[in-house]
Length: 163
Image 1 (tube, rainbow, N blue to C red):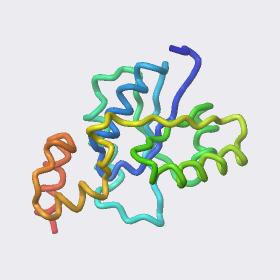
Image 2: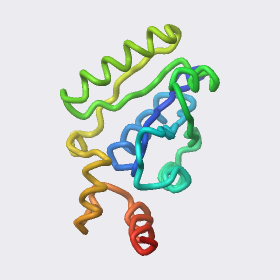
Image 3: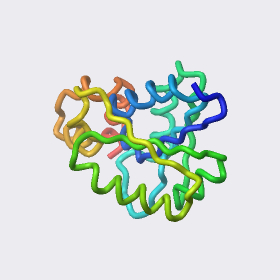
């Protein structure tokens, strides 16, 4: 473990899945501190509010003492600089993720050459899993207990009652 290295794991986390949690757990073993940063992207319309996503992540990672949950607006590299982070973690599930992630990594390197991006693959049982799929399955009342923690399902059900 590099005691001086802070890792940043950004994402929308709409909702957090076991694939995300697999990466967070392994990152927490590799780095002194992991900041899980929720992107507040105005061009996306998330199902869960920023407050709900933050709460679900906090519940998910409470057993990891070196994991912090935060959120950000704007450019990821600006946020990383503000938090004194030199390493960004990105998840790769399949080859189809690579082209987009590669483009983002090169762009971030051009904007902030002092920040390095590394890729982590989730456990193979989560390689097909993404938040969009989980949201769709929840909307169709499918059993998603193998994909997300129970409190994500409960939050979704409370949200449905409000609609």
